[in-house]
Structure formats: structure tokens, C-alpha cells
Amino acid sequence: MAPPPLTLSIDLGARSYPIHIGAGLLGDGARLMAALPAGRLLVVSNTTVAPLYLPRLRASLAGRDVAECILPDGESWKTLATLERVYDRLAAARINRDGAVLALGGGVVGDLAGLAAATWQRGIACAQLPTTLLAQVDSSIGGKTAVNHPAGKNLIGAFHQPCVVLADLETLATLPDRELKAGLAEVIKCALVRDLRFLEWLEREIPRLLARDAATLAEAIHRACAIKAAIVTADERESGARALLNLGHTFAHAIEAAAGYGEWLHGEAVAIGLVLAAETSARLGWLGRPEVERVRSLLERAGLPVRAPRIGRERAYELMSLDKKVVGGRIRLVLLKSLGEAVVTGDYDAGALEAVLVAEVA
Image (cartoon, rainbow, N blue to C red; front, side):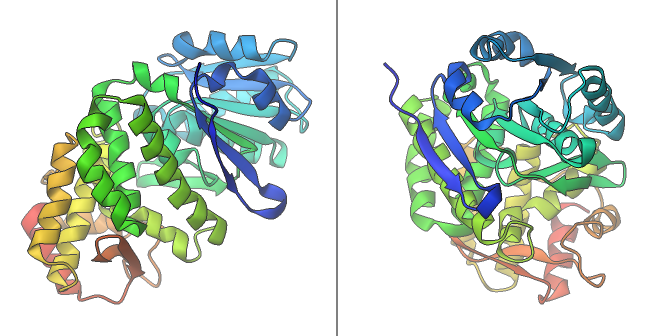
């Protein structure tokens, strides 16, 4: 018998919601239906996930009016054109304001479905049912929804909190190794941002995580979600502390956009971004070389890339200048004062960033 799920809360007043982490949650219809409004439902999934888990989800929703929208799989489909397909299904299924969108899949599905819910009839409910490690620890939590634009990643979006997050650990059994490793990048990021003890735990437990030990994965997900939940609760719309969760992402989004969406998994690009953030922090005198190598070593042991593609210094600057943290034309970065302590700053020596980009991407 599976242990009871772990539950965290995002405390945002009327927009508060639970995050449940455990095995078999996609079959827990009572838990899911208790969080959903009474109207029609639209499940948004993709061609990879739907055959694996949609039947189980539909069975748990017996008695409800459920329609489906099955999308192609991959980051390259995270576009306005694909979003329009979701709108078409919402219209055909006659989903009104008392209905809801259920996002069954990884980060692309969650972001697309969440944005559709945020904007359909000026906003309807959304449940996040993440099936990848990256989505379970990051993109399903906090209400960020978006699609990509050729000029940059996640440039078109809205904040729209879900009504519930169900992270079913059984879905990780079918996750390809590459996707599992990509998710570990976001777990490592959370530790670097706020929790040195968690970082030390990850350094010890990486072999068990890669071996998919269920208890170890559950603890890693719970600890990463707890960090994100605390930060989102304090700063829902990223006016301050929430930007810390973008550690490595300014570099990562530039890599993804330059290479073409889908060439790199998001977590792979984040891993490289974490290394570049650590290198920049070192050039500012905040980290020593042993700390930088510690970051690099942990990511390498997790099976993640740590060397940036040679996208070119000028292209990197061009793409980083579109980052949502830019203020007054100044690229603000999330950097490390120490391992476990991240800061958001635009007040840094530009020469340090220049030196890193010349050394790593030029």
C-alpha cells in the first residue's frame, strides 16, 4: 500500500491551493474532484502522455463531462498557433466559466493549458497534473503560464494560479532518462537558491535519484516544492524574491532561443545557465573556484551538460536583453553570494558578465 501523499500549500488568500505529492494520485478522483468547479472539463495533454495516463484520469473522473485536447509533443509546439488549437477545443466543448482545464503532461502542456485557462472567457479554473520531474518541482507551481515567441522564451503569458497540483510519482516510471536528468537541474537550482543543506543532501543522494529510488525522489520533490512554495507565497507576481527562482534562466533562455526551441531540453539549458551564473559570481568575487567546481561537479554527476553552445557573444546579449528581469535596459541577473544564497542584481561589474560570455559562448 502506497504511503499517504505529502501535501504543501500555496497561501495566497482566495487563490490558495494545495500541492499533493504521492503515488497513484491520477486515480484519486475524490481528491481531484473536490478541487474542481462543477462545469465541463477539458483535459489538455500530448501524444506521448495521453496514451499512458489519460485512461486512468478519465476513470477517476467518472460521471463528469470531460473533453480532450491532445497536442503534439515538444517545446517547438509551445506557440500561439498551438494555443489557438486549445481555444478551438474549449469552444467546441462549450466550456464556460464554471468549467476547468486539466493540464496532463510536462512543462509545455502545463504552460499552454494554463495560459488557455487564464484567458478563456477572461479566466477559468485550471488543475495542474504534472507528469515530468521538471514540471512537478517547477513549472506546475506558482501560476506562471506562457507560450514562446521567436524573439524569446515565455514572452507571451499571464499569471494564473491553479486550483490544485497533483504530482503523481508513478508517472516518473515512464519518464525517459534524459527528461529525468533535466528535472534534476531544477531541483539543484532550488537548493542553490536557498538551502545549502539540501544541496549537501543532493550531493550524497544523486546516485539514488538517478536510479529512481521512490523514497529519495519523493523527498527531493517535496523539498524543492517547499522552497518554491515559500518563495511564491511571499512574492506571487515576481516583483522581488520570486525572481530568485530564475537562477541560471537568463542564460538558459538565450541558449534555448538561439538553438531553436526543442533542440535543448529546458533543464539542460538551465544546467548550463547555473554554471554560467556560478562563473559570473566567481568573477565578482562572491564564489571561490572550489564552489564553482562543486556546482559543475554536481550537475555533471546528474548527467547534465555543463558547457554552453557557441551561440556567440552578440547573440547572447541580444537574447538576454529580452529577459523579463531587464529594467531600464540593464540586464539583471540572479547570482550566488554563496552556495544556498542567491540574489537578484543589476548592480554588478558588466566586465564580469562580458568575460564569462567571451569565455563560454563566443
